[in-house]
Image 1 (cartoon, one colour):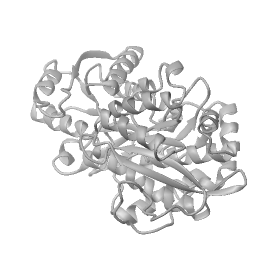
Image 2: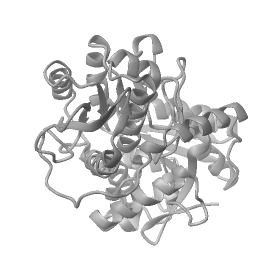
Image 3: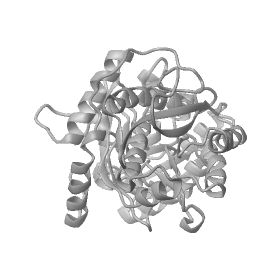
Length: 409
């Protein structure tokens, strides 16, 4: 399937910045997996020389753990690699240290924790979360205390309105880009009417708007939109409502683990037609256990990191992606698909500090919004008027085939 061509000016800027960021590309080296202290994800006992200090708020427990734990794993691999040579900031080589807090999927706890990270730990920047609700808890603190925050959560409202989000950046794909790819796939398969099942909250709101517009443009009828309950359980009623109109296909716009739970209930409600997921559904949990059979054959739009890296692709970003996946497989035995946004967040923050020759929060913020770079999850192009940086040409269409995600064409 063809992807939109990238503007040549963007491509050239990306090449220049990617070339200057060579010291930050992941090399897949480091230490074996080990228990993580709540305060430090890199396992070091004490600071060693000057540091670039990053605070991370992640859902290691609670509703968002299906994605939060994966991001914490990605952080380990990245820190082991990046600290081999450290980061040149001005006339110093700084070790990158990430102070991790488990927000337990609670927005209020996330807000309290990042306040402490900024005021007490004196972090230079923030990264996290994987839930839009916890991201909103962090955003208010980041803006008030003027600390750059790189969000890993889906939901276009995270960086909008831009006047109220000057210190906030988002790595996940924009909902309209994902929706357009889904709508194009559905139209090409000759499906005339689809139902949409969306998560409650910011992520679902973004999806509902984007899918409705994309289907209308593609000439596909949206039969109905059904909201999943906020509780994360009891999806049976929503599933029955979705299949009641006998659509040709069903889109599930929800993050793991809700995406898998919704798929199970749809099958129990008698649905045997095609299923389509947005990028947030792609996590190990979606393909495991009782989900494995119900999602077989389902489609998803997801960043290209899901397809791995071919041996013939030797760009710096492709080699870094291949080494990351190899290291992940060594440590965890399987890579069933997720976007390592936390790794890219560390790289972007470190690159901003290097380019600005400073760990000043304001200077890091200023240089974050000028970066155009190929990361592990995909390509990013930030600008003062655009803080959601995932490029649309980084997205691909995948299908579950024999328990794994396979590039679809």
